[in-house]
Length: 200
Image 1 (tube, rainbow, N blue to C red):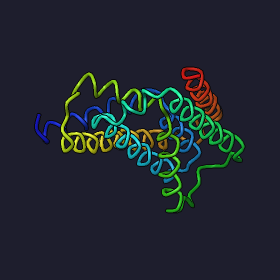
Image 2 (cartoon, rainbow, N blue to C red):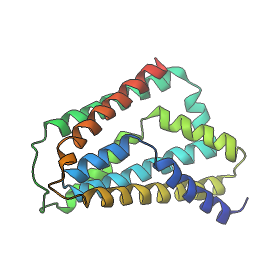
Image 3 (tube, rainbow, N blue to C red):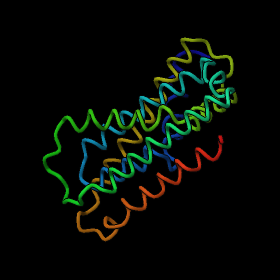
């Protein structure tokens, strides 16, 4: 397969794998509903960057080495769960405010960091990419794997950014805004707990 095909496959995989309910999607919904648009945009980019790393590790073959070590997977799952629960607690305790017009640029940087930190240690995400790599392109060359991973990051970040934009357009007086962030945070904690249970 050539590099153009690798880029196209990566872009498509990034979009498709970004759509299912996951940690970054839920964090984006929570942030966008709170009116923290730049933070939500940063989450999108951070989540896309983390997907780039996971896909790159998987298609290069390093991901298999990580996922084949149960003790490392256990440590990663616990670390990911602690980070996710910590994020949920901080978000839950945040004072409800009207949509914040003073969303400054530092929020985008914090969002990027948060999106990457919520995703990178997640062994479930890495294991999923390892399975995708084994099924679709187990013998990718380094250049193909890198281009494919960059395509994944662009597709993933694009989907996350689109989600943030859609959610931020919900009317500020919509009744769902009172409960959706709480539901999103509860589901986030549930995902963290399930992630630990699967590897313990």
